[in-house]
Length: 195
Ligand SMILES: [Cu+2]
Image 1 (cartoon, rainbow, N blue to C red):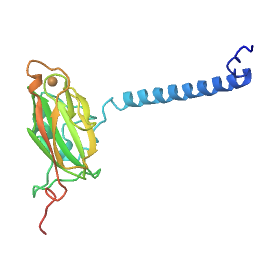
Image 2: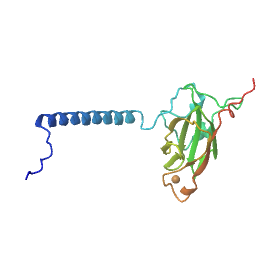
Image 3: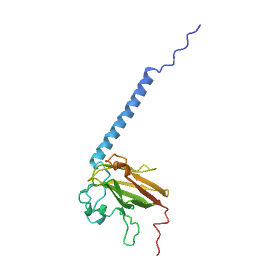
Image 4: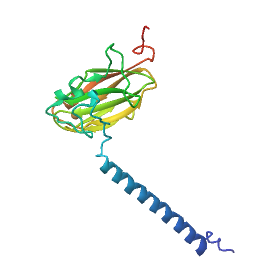
């Protein structure tokens, strides 16, 4: 006999409240997106390497830019982890280790990068020829590497082990060969010191 009840409808006022709430959320998200885009434009899109004139390690790098034809004048001339006079990994003023990597000619330099676990490391990566990708497998380290730009990423590896750094952006005939070793050493080794 009975016609099934029509599904409950929200009354006009409740609907209006929902509408206002969702509109508010959309406005906030738009504002955050706008601020984020603006901030990335102002900072040069890539996280810029902190530079100060007195710091020899950052010579030739200005606001995250380098001359790709003249890497000899920059820390990229000696790719790898920055070490002090005694060969120990050296902390910079921000309290992280620095490692410099160069992508080009279908390779990454250094061929093997060893970093200690548990210590923040800032990876600075640049390219000599064309656009490359830089991804460390099994991590969220992933950046586009452009000639003339320095991509700087600070990461802390918690677990010792061996990964690969690969190029994930097609760069030419040798693209598939752009694989190098990325080794995270247990905290004890590498930081060993006799006093
Ligand atoms: Cu590639």
